[in-house]
Length: 364
Ligand SMILES: NC(=O)C1=CN([C@@H]2O[C@H](COP(=O)(O)OP(=O)(O)OC[C@H]3O[C@@H](n4cnc5c(N)ncnc54)[C@H](OP(=O)(O)O)[C@@H]3O)[C@@H](O)[C@H]2O)C=CC1
Ligand SMILES: O=C/C=C/c1ccc(O)c(O)c1
Ligand SMILES: [Zn+2]
Ligand SMILES: [Zn+2]
Image 1 (tube, helix red, strand yellow):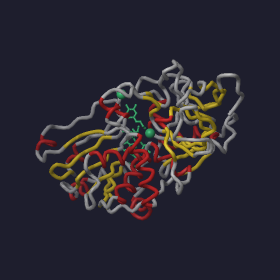
Image 2 (tube, protein in one colour):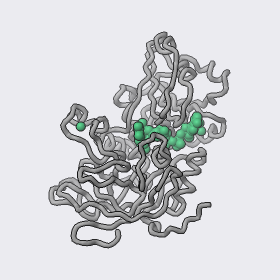
Image 3 (cartoon, helix red, strand yellow):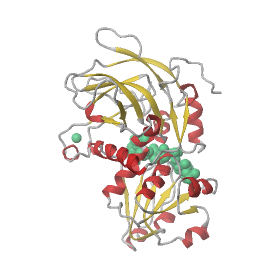
Image 4 (tube, protein in one colour):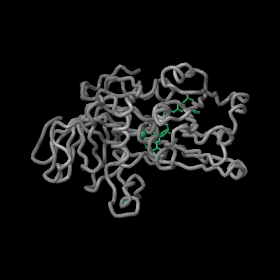
């Protein structure tokens, strides 16, 4: 952390200034630590495809300067007087949301990610009127409700992708009653979220089929991740042979794509769970869902309870994420490589081990 005055702490983050999405050092202040706030020194932060959508203004609502990053693991350095769950030295995580109204139906049901007044960890405005800024920064201050403890047995860099990618696949499997061993699941798009999908679903005892845009990841999917089958979505013969075979598909594709080829893979009552953030209409003809009583649904990250659950699930099952750890000055190259589908399977930035104030990056 940087200089401290009586009330606010100055920090450095790496921010996008416009929709080019290029990140560079940016100095701003954290709010004064409130009674329920936890101040954390960031150690690691994963790069999610949503960070690309946000810095590049794919959804048309981006505000700059924007420090992205919502798979944040850090060490507690200060807590407010009413914080009971955490103390200095704890290793903790922060994900996609840092606030909610606490009064609406989703909040009362502990699914605060569906609160219409939720506050995003970046590209949003906090209750004090300050912009929220994410985890590619030296420190964050976060309400204790939105902080989770990283359990012993999980390395901090390993935990980072679980705070978005991990809980994003765990939550719909739990919510839609898809944790039963023996189910046949499909993971469409083998990236950061998808690879956690394979690992989590396999640990639940499912038969897992990866559905990918190319053959490039076949050996890795089967040998390293433990998938049971692999389909290339453009191979009509493979797709036809797999028709009517899956109980669910977790669709992580981050761009417009047809749904009908995947609906055809589902059995009667099968579920297509949309995960990708796509700002264009998707289409299908109604018989594709009527004939088979199929469901097209979606799911958004997971609750704070589910975030704690998935962390413990990974400890209990011995699950790790497959990551490439990079320094902060590589972040722009990492974003570019993620955008061109060139990472196995999640970048995690070693924020704590980087000279975060150094603007000299190795990017072209
Ligand atoms: N709903 C939610 O709560 C969450 C949503 N997301 C969203 O999910 C999506 C995936 O995120 P993430 O896993 O981080 O992204 P990644 O880029 O890591 O993975 C996406 C995968 O989809 C496939 N893919 C990429 N582009 C295309 C394309 N144009 N057409 C077909 N397939 C493609 C690739 O897999 P392959 O090589 O196998 O084809 C790629 O690895 C993003 O839109 C992200 O914003 C992320 C987290 C939470
Ligand atoms: O990566 C986590 C966030 C996902 C997300 C899902 C839906 C949406 O509209 C977003 O802006 C982000
Ligand atoms: Zn994410
Ligand atoms: Zn609410």
